[in-house]
Image 1 (tube, one colour):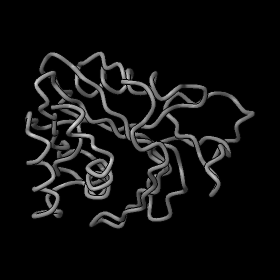
Image 2 (cartoon, helix red, strand yellow; image 1 turned 30 degrees about the vertical axis):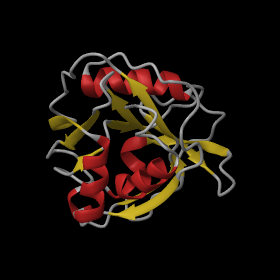
Image 3 (cartoon, helix red, strand yellow; image 1 turned 90 degrees about the vertical axis):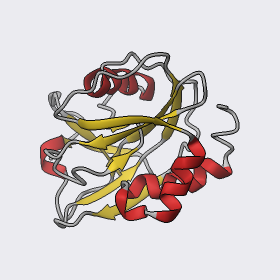
Image 4 (spheres, one colour; image 1 turned 45 degrees about the vertical axis):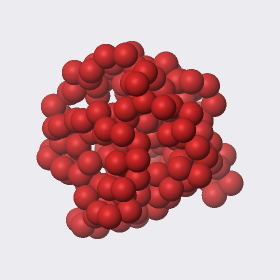
Length: 187
């Protein structure tokens, strides 16, 4: 692991203490293990102007949760990068979309820990953002194998009826987003 005072690591994650304060950085390829340290991530849910939500299916080549349906896209902000900058970078890389967030995260302090079938742990403080886009994605096949525009209430039903078919972070986020009135504000 590399401390915050050393040279920049191009593809890294920001490590966090239990209080959520940055504690350094580490190469992204080294942190997702059976003992993943707490680090900063984000989740973004994209809506069309008609209120439909973009769900994506993770590529089969993904190291964790390959092939599961999930929110529009996720990522890790880099040291010194704002959430808005990270969303823009990942939106372009994963979906070929320029994504501008609607402001502050809907769930600014969302935190989760999940273990996939291979034993790899996700351990993140993961603010959840929403944004609106007016065109279809052009997915990077290394990241996304399929996508659909769906009604938010169908996503809520999917999470309730088949949580094993979607990412564990989405299973936890959707009820919190529902309580925050996410779909009503987008319809």
